[in-house]
Length: 480
Image (cartoon, rainbow, N blue to C red; front, side, top):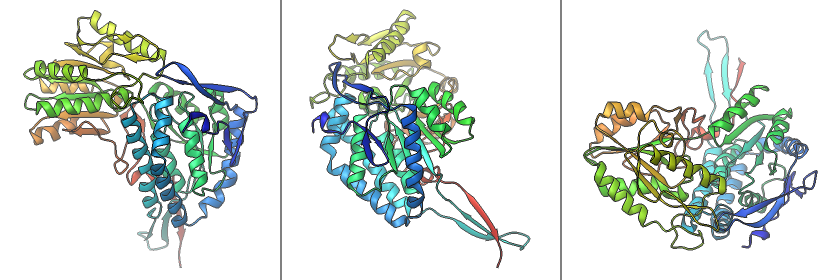
């Protein structure tokens, strides 16, 4: 489908409207730097109107039978699968990731609807008798009400459905602020939900060019009861402070700084293959991406050479070219940030085995890069790179290495490669991260709890836990 086929208005109360001030936001193709189209920009007034519309629709939805809600979610899964090609095309156009990765994202995003269709009919309660015998204890889990969702640009489909599906399954209504960089996929998903019969007003999509004022208006609306955010830890801290003013429930999936640990006994081809998945899928712009590579000294030279060879085989270019395996970064600022970290590491003594510089435009591309002999204390090992750069840190002392791996405020993901399963499990348990890939380079799955420790987030998305994040717990005392 052509990008302009998407209705680019705000979605409020089941209607497509312009923003209160008539502003439009240009959406760029990062492979060319040129505009694709423009979309309506919402104001704080529009954000509050959307919350009101969600509140008006939510009560009837909460009273709808779980099976009915479940069947609509399952239909949403099917329609996303049926529209894989067009959704993937939108993702490539506005984000730039390779087409194969975009199709994989659509499949992953759709699966949250199917998984939560099954969870919707299994939200459990309990009945018990108090120890004193004077009352019965009834516990159930009603929906939160209106949930405000703020999603990032790196997964235009999946970061919406991972929140949206359990929220709807639990009986909530939502207001979504999609990223201004990649809003078209969100708007198209809204259209598909209308097509499968989701009642109007339950999903409201309001993009904006003024995030701070938009968020203030949304959280200050009395109907808002919860905020779900995926993005940087820096922004997450700001939003948490703001949510505290109204004591709103929050689920936060924040930044990462994942260690990728390779022991001497690791299967080298498997470790390199896993490293390429953990580092380079979706053009290396993922919060779960391997950020620091700790290679034991006995295998470090071979691992470095093999990883550099694999990175050298990566084809950089427009994601619509099916031979491309790394697309553009999201914008010019991303290139500046990545290159600043690389130049800083090289100036401090790291060796650029391959790559190490931006690719000349048009578009926003960076060379796949491997840096050897990186110091653990350098900025590139302490900041989230969000680009195709693999800094390798050799180690001899496993205990000291684990201390270094944990020497960060982030704790989203970690990766461990060893053929000694007992050691792998021991090390995995010592890594302060919410998710560990043991001898594998990908961990995400709708059936698994996604989330981090420390400043990488609060709460979990996916698995059985995910839908309960969007529920209250109510206790009723009675006797009969």
